[in-house]
Length: 217
Image (cartoon, rainbow, N blue to C red):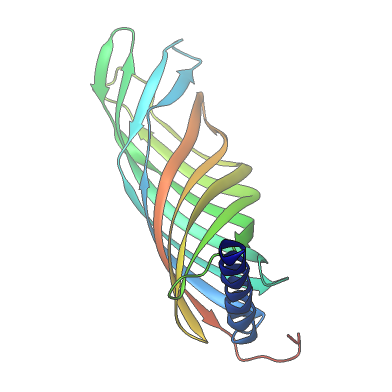
């Protein structure tokens, strides 16, 4: 009986903490993010030479801004715009490995759904997220020693993300976040190249509640 009572008190305190956090915040907020994007080897193919293999990107920094809307104490939506530019490093194919130049500059436009868990300890709160939208890429490939074709092209396609993280609320109006997410898009079509594109993104962010009351609480 004592164990059951302690469990009930614990659950009630968690619910009260979540309700209190909700009462202290606006439903509309702005978020900014700084991220590190790490890339795995991506498959590529080139039609004029018939070469295929893996292409490697260097790590890249990303910047993002978002407007968020809290739908309930746990669920929220963010409309996000983010930017990153990743330099190309090398290609590996049947004949060997080759250093190349160029870069891929990407803009992502995502609608992200977040779930903030009920667990709230000392202002720390875990969350999960997934997003969909589209990506705009500007790519340039500089041939290595003339062994592969040079290419420059723009590409637009589907984009998605999935991940999770931890939020720490500094005060009723402001919180800092840290999270990981996997970001992928449809293949890049760069002239005669077809290139897979995805990365692992590690982000630090800040949420600032906007002082508006017209949405209500």
